[in-house]
Image (cartoon, rainbow, N blue to C red):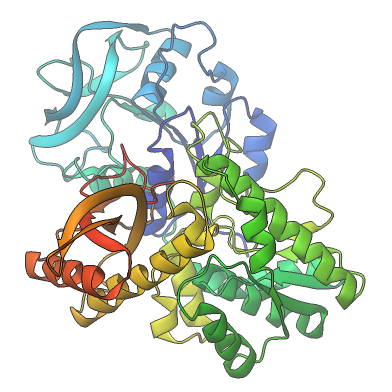
Amino acid sequence: MARDSVLIVDFGSQFTHLIARRFRELGVYSEIIPPGTPLKTIVAYKPKGLVLSGGPSSVYEKGAPQISREVLEGVDVPVLGICYGMQLMAKVLGGEVVQSDSKEFGPADLEASPQSRLLRGLAARTRVWMSHGDSILRPPRGFSISGSTSNTAVGVMEYPKKGLYGIQFHPEVKHTAQGMQVLSNFLDLCGCSRDWDPASFVGETVDKIRQQVGKERVICALSGGVDSAVTAVLVHQAVKSQLTCVFVDNGLLRKDEAMQVKERFESKLGLPLVCVDASKRFEKALKGVTDPEKKRKIIGKEFIDVFKASAKKIGPVKFLAQGTLYPDVIESQSVKGPSAVIKSHHNVGGLPKALGFKLVEPLRELFKDEVRAVGLRLGLEEEFIFRQPFPGPGLAIRVIGPVSRPALDTLREADAVVVDEIRKAGLYRKVWQSFAVLLPVKSVGVMGDGRTYDNTIAIRAVDSADGMTADWARLPHDLLAKISSRLINEVKGINRVVYDISSKPPATIEWE
């Protein structure tokens, strides 16, 4: 079923994904495309609107990402330029962009014109979030200025007759007080129906999987988490007995997870399941490895090798189903545009080139909460659906430094304590993730009147909407004290506990 959509040209902003996220929250499906996408390709999408994202470049720099005048004037739908996108629009259409004498990074007060349809509903003076070192000195012919700040004369420019709009601030970030109103106004200008519901895509996704797979066999990389579970159920609905789920116990899982996976997916959901104990294999492959990227690459390779071996036992297998999400893709590689690579996810950037399988990734364009909505529609139990995310590389990237069996065992016990106390405090559903990290730091302590020289555990708990940005969770001090006491008293080899108060960005949620 065709649905209204908006395309976003990614010029390298780390906030590009948030623009897509916000449009979906407003009920309109959105996708990100790279700069340089030809006009005919854009038109073939049949979008109702086009957005030009922000970016770190200056429009007059050599090699800066560009867009053609042909695209701006030929798409025949409203176009919204944000920050760099606005400056690029101005430059391409004959305006003048210069380096600002006074740069703006952070909050600013926007004076909004009451005549502007794009700014409809905004207060005459509203707080916005700026991040730019260049400014538009002179808008292109036909554009009017409908918003400004004390440092930026051209804060908003419009050419309604041609459906061209530009804003210097970032409406997609929460720091812009009425950013959602601006984006909603743009969708109204595009004439978009607000009919995007991630749960509603189940039927069409099952049909797509059926068409893609045909009569071939599929194996599903079942990790035990929400993403792979939803993937498995979708594929099973599509191809039934053609699917075999493969669960690899890599020795990097949480406490008792292998047992829980077998019970949940084989007994409760009735999925065809093959369990493979490859813990010694992964331990050997990771021995002595400290670089986080190498860990991820090794884990990705070992997973695929195990799947290949399992596939041979199952019979001829052509497809591999994975629970890859949109944030995995964005962070792992620049498949959509010039956004910076943050880290390789084992199921995206960590996959070897000679894969040997064709991929089935039904969740590849979804954010985490959208996957949860799909899972609920599929009938998965709520307690499982709202389980906190767990990284594909598992505890290997929460053991900072070399991975060893003793280190993993220590971390497993520590992580179980953290999660148990978070649950008891009624906060498990309120925080995005909460877990333990084993640091390669030993320190002196005193236990039972004796000297100790033991390990340090870091507690990490964050609040987030989609995992792309996050803030550290303000856990009650009494709760932190209780977790610390249990860790030191119950987990052998721990004598110091610290709490991570870093946000993403500049940090990431995981330490590696």
